Image (cartoon, rainbow, N blue to C red; front, side, top):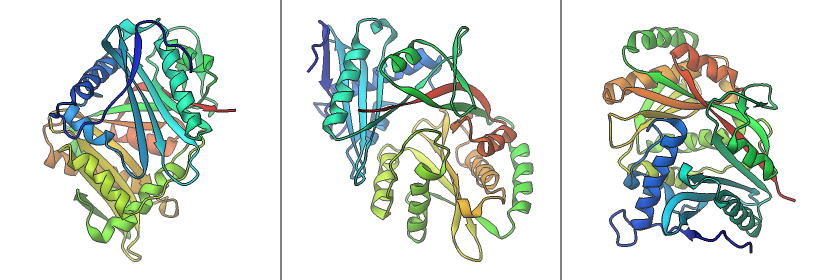
Length: 360
């Protein structure tokens, strides 16, 4: 076990039963520092989440173990370290993050934290480590994605990954849509999509998922990891069933987050062919996040992506009119989905690198 720099403690984070529990102080402080780090990186608060909404995301599930440490320097919390371990049979991957306040840079904290991550991953039998980081635009040298789509600056974070033996596999685009006055354009696009999607109908629900759709929705969720463009990233397949859908739903309902699912159903077969998710926290005036969107491979070519996105956004404007904008993420080489987003009016605001290391 490597020696930590003097003044550094990497303390395992206890996940409290509630945000008001006597042992919740570390979790509340982790959440506060998390939000400060994202503001320092991105220059805005659209990534922020209050501690009580973040807590359900950290409760253990059958599908994934989340290991978290807080980084303390001379007793002050200056960042957090996380390692997510999927629990599918034969899982090889671990997904990690190291997030530090800018004032804590240059002290060896990141290197010590990564040593902890890699050592823990090996102990858990993992052979593939993956991590994502936002790389704000700067002048100077850049790295091109091996996919041929997108580039990021060779900044401090990129150099950290390279020094630790990682390769850049993919660029992810963050995009944002201003919802003010967007309804006429969305209605026109929806009309065009409906004409192209003859034989399909739109169905929408908030949580919980209607029982008659649970199995079909679980299948679509399982395809997100395999059907979305993954570049050179090596993922484990995911198994979704009714129990996993229920666990996933609890991370939203326990936080009082509002989630709308929009699906396209093939009328003749009854198959669910596409879906889109929109979610906002308890503060309905905050940013909306567009989460998973997928068109099942056998149903592509009918403009179902445009159909479910526009139908979802229009219903969202009626349900949550206070939320002024939507944020989403797409692989830069996912041109079909990016083309839909661009047509709707999403504009790029930032880029992330997806990094991978295969452990020897």
